Image (cartoon, rainbow, N blue to C red; front, top):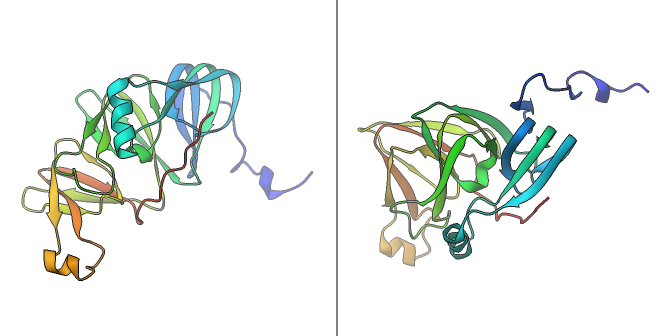
Length: 225
């Protein structure tokens, strides 16, 4: 059988070392030797001896997700083999964290990560009235994190003299050390008259960066493996 479909560009090869790599721009391959974590429903294929189990995160976390509709629904992948993760053909990116590093990521943008990373769900300080979700996930420690973004991300530097305001439905993540607060870009009178649709944003102050996607978020679909 002959087809461009079988070109090396599309052909999956066996991994030579444990851990995650980009299979292509839209998917991540994880060579599992023990365990890793991934968003529920993200596995599109696997080979080897792997088990996929829903991962509980504690009563407090489930209460937060019930209130906000946001969060990070995880599964743990255990065993030895290879798994491929993707989500609605979104672009995939790898982030390597070293000891002392930390990054805050919106739960909807997490695809998979090493079990060596520490993570916790925290309230977005100052953003209690926004529509983009109250809770985000802070990752720290040493390991690799796989992210997804619909479209090509925009990474904007934040400096003490140049704070940045972002739409809460478009934000992917930011430097954990940045301070967050609400910024109102319309007067009350303008909002009462219908407004521009850009009434309140998340403001970030300090030294670091913020990542945004080139569109506003769609409602999440529930899924699981």
